[in-house]
Amino acid sequence: MRVMGVDPGLTRCGLSMVEASSGRRVVALDVDVVRTPANQPLPQRLLAISEVVEHWMDTHRPDVIAIERVFAQQNVSTVMGTAQAGGVIALSAAKRGIEVYFHTPSEVKAAVTGNGRADKSQVTAMVTRILNLQTAPKPADAADALALAICHCWRAPMLARMAKAEAAAEKQRKAFAARMKAVAR
Amino acid sequence: MRVMGVDPGLTRCGLSMVEASSGRRVVALDVDVVRTPANQPLPQRLLAISEVVEHWMDTHRPDVIAIERVFAQQNVSTVMGTAQAGGVIALSAAKRGIEVYFHTPSEVKAAVTGNGRADKSQVTAMVTRILNLQTAPKPADAADALALAICHCWRAPMLARMAKAEAAAEKQRKAFAARMKAVAR
Figure 1 (cartoon, chains in turn red, cyan):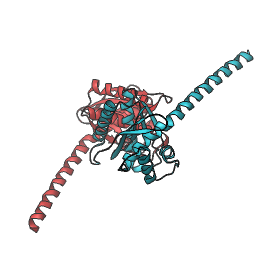
Figure 2 (cartoon, chains in turn blue, cyan):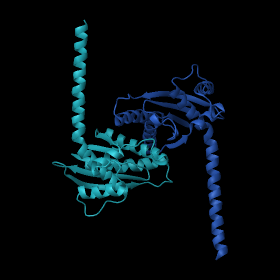
Figure 3 (cartoon, one colour):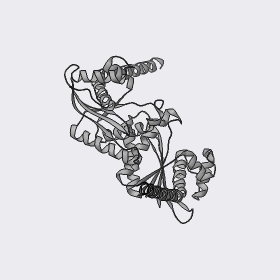
Figure 4 (cartoon, one colour):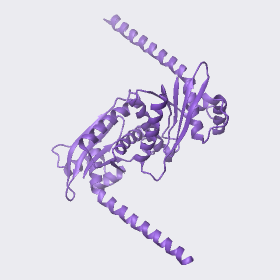
């Protein structure tokens, strides 16, 4: 499974591409940070990000896009731009029929370091170790994008199991409701 | 000048198209509200909105897109979706080289009713009167999209004057700085 990780942002947008192989092995294929100048109009910034992201999708052909889920509560000054960039990236994925998953920052930290409140240096250190990199990825946006992709690789089997269990429960609920109706008749 | 007004949102996205003619006369050409189901995944919702918006841009060929500016402070539960939808619409405009302007809700209310704190019914009533409509536009998202486009038509000359004045001031500042350097030499 090939996973593209995205740490969305207007000023710096982290992109990563990893390949999940047997067990928990994850191999890094590519990483980049797209920067757009703060004095550029928003539509042009979004266009610049979208062009790089679409180029990545078309050349690396990921199976899944994992995007960091942002909340309106965190960092009010940048949250709108982050949401706008994330929306544009989700749109590019939808146009190509690529599945999109969102993971919260604490899910990513927990998956990679075992601690949902790990700091940036701990995340970077674990990403470097997991991917067996010679040097630590920089800036933090690059490390975050890699952590996001790793998180998805490791959470995907669990998410699939949860979806399957939920579908089975839903089927049971429907069957039971039909049974109730039949009994009441 | 043909202006497309957008009240961005995932559940309901208001779209309008108006034509500004001589003086303050504004004629309504089209209005719609794009709805996407809340149980659909975000990428598909953004794709559905983007497809309608792009169709509008390509058939109506607006000169300008006026989008409501959202703040992270207002209505936390819907603000992220609003930002994501707004981002996707700004991207579609950038791809076509169409200028995008953002107006805040209070700028829109002030332009249309003369009161930046007007309520929804006052905005709807003024939009109906300004555009000389037989019936009031419904739902509120449709009226808001029309109000946004009207607001842009009326603010555009002022924004152009402000941009011109700012450019002139910047030129003066540079000339003066150069003069200071020459004097100091």
